[in-house]
Each structure stands twice: as C-alpha cells, then as structure tokens.
Image (tube, rainbow, N blue to C red):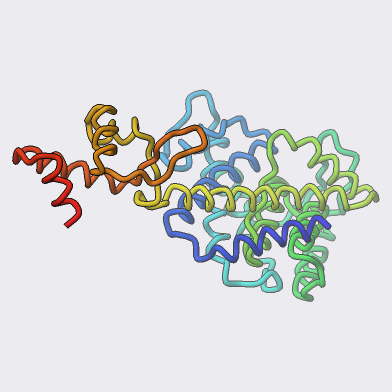
Length: 326
C-alpha cells in the first residue's frame, strides 16, 4: 500500500514536469548536501549539515575536524555527481566496475590501499551480531549480486533499491565504506528509475541499523523496506512542496491583490488619498473581503503613477478621470 501512495506522488510530480531549470538546480544542490551529510553522519562523521555545505561547496576547512571527515564529505559529493551522470542507464546495466567505482570514490585519499578493491580479510561491525562471509567468497558473491541485478528482478523500483542495498551491505565486500557504498548504489537505482534519492535522517540512524540487522539475522525485510520507502516518500514531498512554492512565488503581479495600506506603501501616498481617489472613481477595487477590506490589483500602481503625473499638470480630478477612461 505504501508503494501506491508513493507512486501517486510520483504521478503528481511527473504531471508537473518539466520543472524549471532553477528549481531543479536548487533541489539537486540541496539533496547533494543532505545526502552527503546524512550518509556520513550515520557512519560517525561529526561535520554538521552547515559544515558539510561549507566543505563541499566552498572548499573551506573546518577547524577541529579531521582530514578524513573533510574527504568523506567531498568524496561522497563527487560520488553523487557520478551517480547523477548515470541517469540514462538502467539498474540491470550496473556492473561490478560501477560498484567498485563508487567505493573508490568514497575512500579516495582516505584509504587508497583498499579503495575500489574487495576485502581480503574477515570483517566485523562493532556492536553487531551479524557474521559476514569469508573474504574468499566475496568475488563470487559479488558476481552473483550483479547477475541478480541483470535479471531485471520483478520488484517495485523502491523495493529493488532497498533489496540491492540489503544484499550489498550483507555481503560486506569492502574493508570500510560498505554502508556509504550501499546507500549510493540504492540511490543510483532509484534515480535510474525516475525516483528521487532517499536520505536516512540522523534521528532515524538507530532504526535504520536495527531493521537492517534484523533482516540480516533471518528476520523479515519489511521493516527495512518500509523505512527506505518512507525516505523516498519524504523526498517526493520535498520536490512537490518546492514546485508548489515556486508556483506561488511566480504568480504574476497582476494576479496579486493588495490591501489599501500595501498599495499606499508601494507608491508612497497616504491611505486617505487612495480612499479619496477610489471614491472619485479614479481607482477600481478588485474585490472586498468578508472583513470589509478593499483589495486592489497591482496594476493600480501604474494607474496611480499616471494620476500623479496628470496632477502635476494641474488637471482637476474630473479631467484626470476623463483621460484615464479615454
């Protein structure tokens, strides 16, 4: 049922396309920082959202933060940029080279010896009871994983993305960076299918880890898939809200209505003058609210400017009215 609700929102957003270039750019920049901040925060990076933006967008070094934390931010943003460039491809075209490319971007400059390479040692996650496969099995497990993707699994796009995340992080093919690589791969699959990327909020970290570990230890995957679905739905809500706000802000001035005080302030004349000119028929009231406020179209600003210009010529109000209606 949650997929139906999300797909309804997808249809709403698709119906509003094409989105303006400025809106798309703003949203992409916002998601680039949010995805970078949240994904790294899950792994213990202490950069705040604002600090992440400064590092990624301005290249500014934040005092008291490690070099690794700075590189985690810039690397993740670069990996997102790469993923965005793959939008015309399909999930069944994702190869092991693509997964290694993501991982290489994630660990570049942090752990070059392991960046883009499968692990050759056993690994454990601190505080977790999950036991991962012997490193000798990793290459075959990863081949099976990518072959599974190639079969075009008959899953809903969100379920496919969540399942891919679950499978990759359960194989745990790398010494480090498995979670970030899995989340990037998940979002790559989402954007390839026309869905916005999903970000796991910092406050959802414990639930995210718990539902994932529950599935890895033989429990149901539904709670994990539901968590990812909610994240995708949240991203759709952000897109839809942004589109609606843009429509509101792009409302033409001629469609906007002003109260008498707002109109007087715009043109720099007393409220009493606006009332007098309205009473004399020089200005037109667009509508009167239930509370009794007289509302004016913004085009009355131009009318007032014309009235003031005619008054400077010492015309009477009757003469001005005649010229206005000619």
